[in-house]
Length: 478
Image (tube, rainbow, N blue to C red; front, side):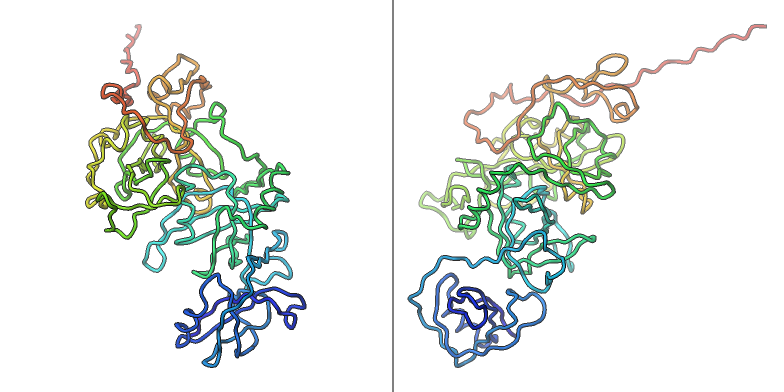
């Protein structure tokens, strides 16, 4: 077995004609332990006595037609040279997949993230794997489709959980060029790639500065429609249409809409909460499972605080199966939205255990009583819903109680929660009255507990029934 990696070189005039660059390096498995010990990642070393041969095949880390091979005679020594240059070879979006582009060579690409979908669980060779779709764009308005798997997709989870996907700069090093449904796609090359979100190197800072100087539209491609150009801006829910579930399942473009539906069940394939930092609500990662702090509490790592923390609390992450008269789908909502429909905070339903949920089928009664109730949800139709056929939609707004939208028909106004989807799609003229909304931007850490009587939700199940008019028989006149 041969192990491949990349060596950064400085004086390489023989190969490049200029100083500075990268070269593909490899060694046999029997030499890997020695080489790995003497070549720590991120440090400079002086290398002697190696072989030089031609480089070919797939997934080459550099376009250089040569590579070096470490042997038993190779000597690795310390170097006095230091350089923080990451030696990026950023590709042009215009040349991706075109003439002169070699799909066998891994590339470096940087861009702004948009159309970020949700993370999906896909069966690959009998195993569950995480997959994430999004698009990257450059400062000239060109964009490319991206697909990341496994640990690379997980890096985006904090941004998805916080519903904060604006202004994410993503650098993918040693990325693979592929094609999907006739379109160029960038993906990770197994575990060889590096994904850096909001990098701080010189090239990334220059990219951000250039991005601030332009106001670019985002090109969104529908499956069966012409390209449409829209501005990337905050959703104005007053202007968003109400649609049936059947309509959103066959949508052909990324957009936001409202659906009026009832909750069929709580999806127990997912836990109903996660642990978030008490300071900022960001998802935290438990450190080595059984390691405890001095006060006996588990240790967690907060990516935003960039430190270990012990003060954590549950935050909602609900997955609900919902339906209307036209069909069914799944909704995912985070802490702020879930607080509105449950009427109490997640910490009040928590049993106090930091261990994983043993039986996901057992859910708190406050969540069980949601079944059968109806709400108006503001949802996002993301790229993953279009390309992958995912029927899970992210909830950004919810209307209930006095804040619910009111719908007027040609006859008389009725509550949106008392109107089924068949009525909404019957062709009558509908008018949505403006009202206050509940915001879902980011996580908020609760500081004051709600009073018990305030936490109770009104019973807002759909109770309206169609009027039953008895037929009147007319006597026949002789």
